[in-house]
Length: 79
Image (cartoon, rainbow, N blue to C red; front, side, top):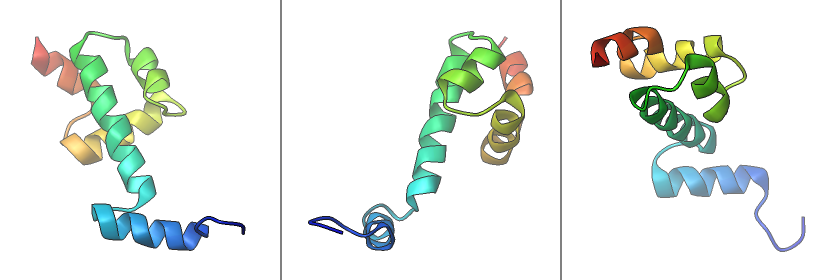
């Protein structure tokens, strides 16, 4: 590798600096975006797509782990 960090070294330095792995950081950012889109009233399929999830099921699974409810329940509670 020329002039940069190896993937392993990057991961170690990223975790040291942020306290989380690059993958966990990206997932946190995607879920935060999904939350904002749901608050804005976007359709669940659009939320999944615009947040970088491969499908609604993936979004729903991770959203429930992070926020304790599915995106559908979250949206109903907003009303």
